[in-house]
Image 1 (cartoon, rainbow, N blue to C red):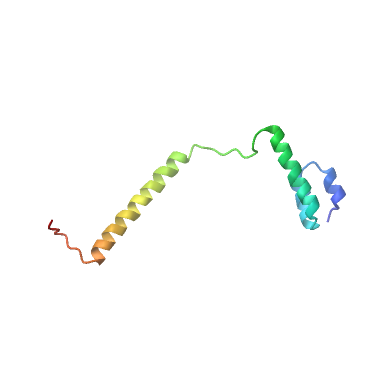
Image 2 (tube, rainbow, N blue to C red):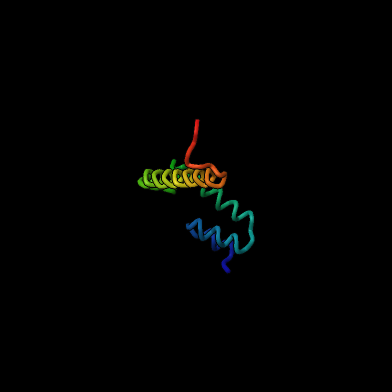
Length: 89
């Protein structure tokens, strides 16, 4: 197991956080996370870059599934309730 001083010399925040976690050092872990937040604020952006290309496909699939489930629920309810095919208004 590495010491905290060895971890602080390392420039990899993930490695530092792991060492702090393994040593159960709450203060070192908080320092690593706080420094990471400051670094991200200085860069002005988030490190996560998500693709937006699948949003349309996801909407189509979820909309289709919603339609199928709703139709099944209506037909099942009508059948279970004894509603016949002849409806008189």
